[in-house]
Length: 183
Image 1 (tube, rainbow, N blue to C red):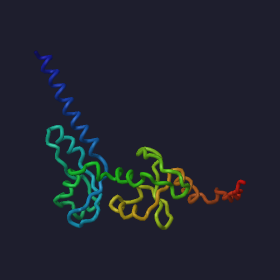
Image 2 (image 1 turned 60 degrees about the vertical axis):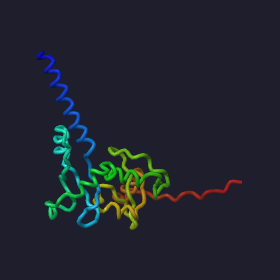
Image 3 (image 1 turned 180 degrees about the vertical axis):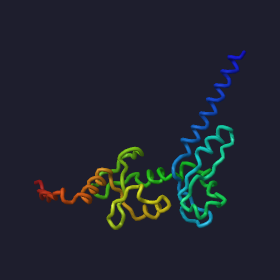
Image 4 (image 1 turned 60 degrees about the horizontal axis):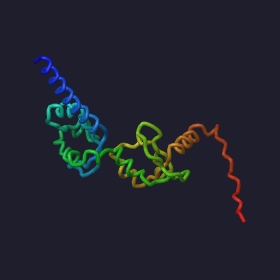
């Protein structure tokens, strides 16, 4: 009888741990929401540790861990959580970027932007002033306005242009030979 009780307890604990881990991994990441107070974009992060614990208890309670409007507005009503509840994946910054890069070609070499792998070889952004930006350089709450005027740059061109900018003395520019028309 005690072996059955231990087995049931292990299964219950494993189930609760699974719920907690699932909530943790599904809801982590920076999200872009519309602040109900200002009607402007705000970058927020959920308190995923709290969410994981409450999910394990069957409650699934969302609360913010960070917001781009804090610390000035840290004690707001967190009404933006309704937007996250409505579409938890749709407001993720990484999904916004993935959608923006879809069907785009590199502004420098013309090659199609490859599917994005978040851990490796991320494409970049070229601003109207021709500066090339990595994603981490653009504050998430400014991303919608930035993307409106930006062009896509592939990872290879971003690396090459960064080298050209940082080490101009090591770069040799060779003119391309003229193309001959074939008869």
